[in-house]
Length: 145
Image (cartoon, rainbow, N blue to C red; front, side):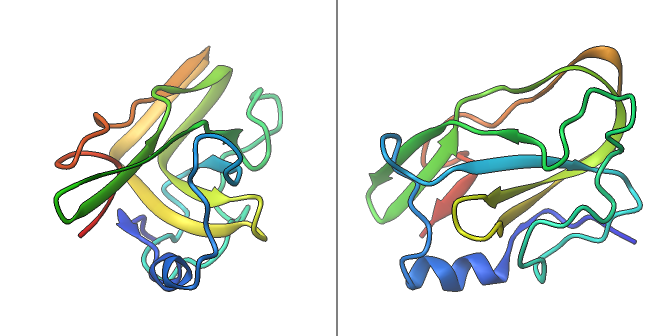
């Protein structure tokens, strides 16, 4: 089992088909779900799955993760980039996770990208924050060029 950080291949195709709307106002709803090291997520992930997702039993973690807030789409030169309000905070959770999946809950839970945290991260009854990189053309979480 492995978590490989990457944009999902299906997401790239769906962008060309006009499926996803990242507008800050009136855009789709995107979510961030957390996964254990037992999950298998990568380029071939097409939709949100609960397989390998962190446990919801007694953890204060909501099944399917939390809703992200779009910051909109910007461009610079030939690059379009977008992200979400940072940090995304899971409040008062008790869990261990290895990675995450950003997905579009407005569009049949279609997968956007997989995040690999590089190691297990644990929280014991505390807030767990996922910090997105700065929103600019060289480091935004999603860049298209």
